[in-house]
Image (tube, rainbow, N blue to C red; front, top):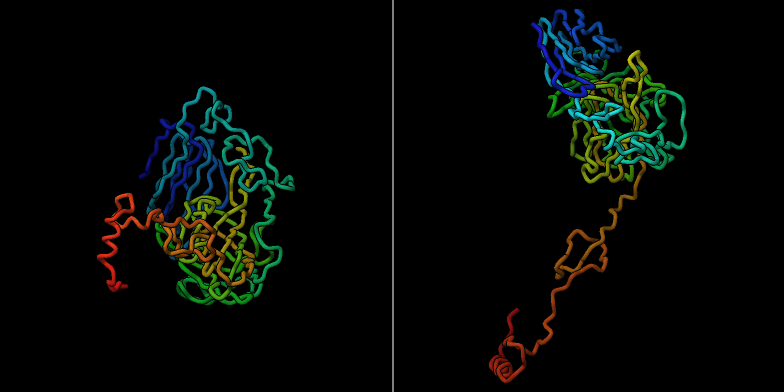
Length: 408
């Protein structure tokens, strides 16, 4: 039995994704009336066309079952999917739903509402208000490959005080689920190794959106030519925790490569889980655990018979501040070159009002900035009865209290 989805009532459908769980048997997939009958396990990892739409299937193998995500890119009018021991969840349809008289690029934004400019956040002249890229992006340098060169200048220190590049471990060394790994089997929270003075631990990939998975971390060669230097760490449904508690940091930078699924990021105990996709760690909060967070980079674009297709994200995580603990991982996710710029260990000055009698007293301020707002002073202190004038009655009040011992 198939689950059928009719999308003909939606305008400008450009992408459909859904998660799947495959317990056994073969699967059926139909897109726009065109169908295949095959094992998803035999189709994953490469793009193929079905019903005029590009299909890409991710796959994670476990003991006795597979699971992953199906990504349909193009004008999906209808699709159906089913199997023998097969489950579908989180069907996500990207459709602008805007009926424009003039929408030349068919991006769901009417031509009269388009804002020309540079739409790439990694460019020097990125315009956050731009909706229509006009080709003006300036990266400092360019090439003709399918991936735009990212300008990381100034984001990270030119030389690292502490560096983890995963070169100390033999290629293929893995850590993770004792039921599936022959090398160093261990459970979540276990110590993996120390490199460059930094302790690293393995953790489960835990998400409030998708639940908990736990497979392995493994030292591999870089799967993408412009990512990393030599050996890198692949987090396959697991995380790596870097213990930086003993290192006062000004900045922490980490190269990242996202080829699918969701990711998890935690800084100083504050966590964020991305959605499925490519480069969606860019949606992380700008401040996590008292640390400024920035994810920069560019999509990896593959040319197909139907046009350009996003197949990954190559970028960098940049943290500014004192990072005590960093945890990161994903499903099809690689990391390399943890670069730490060491700080002085002295807390930065906090300007504010340091006078505790002021209306705007800031107990956390360490440097008085002259902003204190003091209570109003009585312009006539001799007006004891507060009737607006100093007269005989004020004198009588004073004499009546003459010699009284004041209590503190």
